[in-house]
Image (cartoon, rainbow, N blue to C red; front, side, top):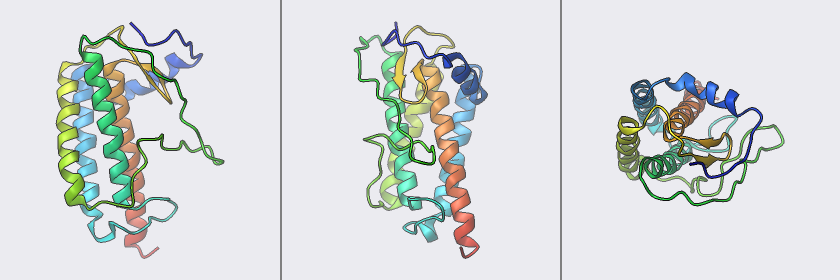
Length: 186
């Protein structure tokens, strides 16, 4: 069962691209765990610059981390829904918007606040890691149950977990680049 009958002409290309984050459920679980652990290390490295705006970014490490957690929490909830037997109801299909430079903007509900301390965010990060990993251990390789993603279209639970790995990696790389610039005195 899918949420919609929407047909994206490049859907198969998008799903093929996501498979770089794991072909099988065990591959996805391993990649997701690796990306989450790497993000934890980057967040801990950010401590001296936690509330400093990063060069070429609009967020501080605190805000970057809160955004990653918010998106991961949402992804974990969607994956859990898809792995359940609950009815999938239609939801609004709002594509993720881009700014003037073509960069995707954070959707409502994933925009961070002014910057919470890591000591506040870290327990949520640990909890969402556990939720994502639990979903990864139970996600089937194939499923007809899908839920709309604003950048990718209808995704299975396993695809949502692949997307969580990609998103975490993307923001870790942004965080690491920003930290390197700050540490170099930029």
